[in-house]
Length: 163
Length: 309
Image (tube, rainbow over all chains, first blue to last red):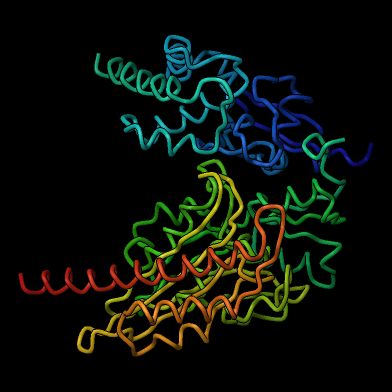
């Protein structure tokens, strides 16, 4: 169809040359065009945070972001770069260790938001953690374990940095 | 199909890199045909709900010249329409000159939204629930509209003639917002009532900005503006006038709150009914004025301590 537009997206350090319709959101392109289903779709209006990805290091809701506007930017998703990412992996280990995952649907968004938080603020206090996650809903855990997981990830990463 | 699964309506997308290009793209077009897309956190949802179905979308994210924060030589502040709310919240310059703007921006959404949503989008969307517009109105903000024909400045408080509409003509784009230097001993407060501490639409928002006359211990100036108090964001001029030149008093606050309610015409929606919103306007008006007054008085105390050192 003539409505397809060629775009280049840089996702987790990998270049993707694809053709998309300009009205597709970044979330739709990640999940449907590229098969990267780690990023979840839920509310579709920026309330729940499950679709969070990083654009140039900043957390954004990919359900409200046009894929075509993400060209030329560094997109990072829960899948992470092929070579692995120490912070991303540590955050995931901490979420598991602290019981911050129950059904797991909110987890990718929480983890990616945590990655953004810790990259800007490696040692956040509890208020800062809760403030950073204010746009994320979890129906299972009650958030306490999630906060603990983020505190754990921050201290683990700080220890590793000091080695 | 539920809204959340819905795709956006089909459109052609243009991604200009300069303001001149934007003006060229919208010259001779109509509002229904072309949508100017800023951060998109409102507009994309409006498209998903089919409230807007433009044939063409002009995305402004690539127009770098619309993304700046600049101190003016006269002590004022200017920023581009595409400045994100997060940039405002994080800007030391904005904090120094107009902390009220940070207070309002910080209450909008969470990080994910503030990283994308822009000041210009919040204003130009012309929604009554916009949080930046009341804060900016009380600071006496002016906005710059640019088209191929040239540019003009308007007072923000005159920008919204009716619900969902602005005075921008179809070939004009909101490019810049400018805020004058704050008066001595002045401070503001923005109080917003909403259900959840994130992403929730404002039920009522009250901005109060006051300057304090330290000699007479009265309000040298007081300005009030409201989100969701009427079909547009508006300034409550009659209410303000009651306190100008007066000292802070409980009776004065009551009278202002009463007049502010009389100037308001909040609607009933599933979020809140009109009477409830009026109650909020009454309570928050008093609280916002008191907070702004106390901050302004304290700022005087801080300044005189600093100069006596």
